[in-house]
Image 1 (tube, rainbow, N blue to C red):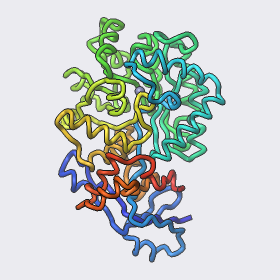
Image 2: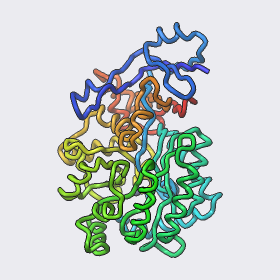
Image 3: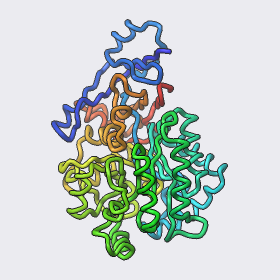
Image 4: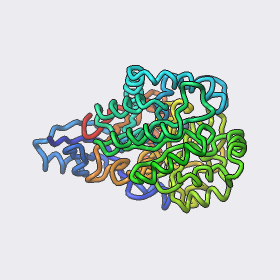
Length: 426
Ligand SMILES: [Zn+2]
């Protein structure tokens, strides 16, 4: 069946970090998108598409803005119910809140209920793809992939592996992590829209033997992604030095076990050494900025401008539940604020690009999702740029599309999300 959405259509034509940001995108006012078989079949003026495809089912969004669905490049869906737990820093936060909650995911029913709730919440916020850590339990992985498959949703996920420095009941072993990850990878990777990510939580909770087992699995299956954490807090980095006295630095704990190459996703990456930055660039790994988490847990200020200028591949993420919001709008706002604190504010075009194409590029899926281009998958988010009285009264003063969009980026939430299309379905 052919479907047409009409509204203002936002298309990125170029990377807004590589040229004038305001010229990187085009907005087709009175625009339209033809959707067929879950894909974007045509983009153009509404008058033209409505005339050319009179049989299509039409959904009219007036002057709402249709953009690519948001792509969240780093989350922990098992932390949905403990989001905004108060007052701890990273290691205490894990021990006090995260680990007790993650124990509950041995129960497949509990895991599925949380996965459904999480995907409903993020969809209501305009997010069409998430990249999630699960828990050590295979049940938690099946639950999320099942829930995403039922929604036709593109998803990246993997079993979180930990064989030390975690409580009883939340540790696997090097061998069981390898066996379980391999079985899950073979079951889910490439099935429908599912992508598997080999997922050691971070070096402090994996022995060198477990990291080596993950590296061996990745060598056998280079087609999958690998996600973990890197250099989030200073005391975490000190701990890594004690645990891996022979490694050159934090990044080296991954590299020496076969976990650094294209397709590696490193969450946070705040306190990097010059060597780490050079090596990440050389290996074309992806860095994932989680600004609401970095301020909420007090981790530090990600060097977006510097890292992008040196050619790093960067995505954007909520990091639920260390992050304080399910909303990529709120996450863009936080990225703007972190940029301001570093003296390098991001343009609204750069923020929107990071939340769509940038994250898709970090996942190496920029040819499939994250933009409105013919042939790409029809994951679309429809935004009301005047969703509250406070935003509306600012919006009427806007001189161009970026000024019209920026109040929604800074002040908007799920009320701004009018609709969300996943795989060509509203
Ligand atoms: Zn995380």
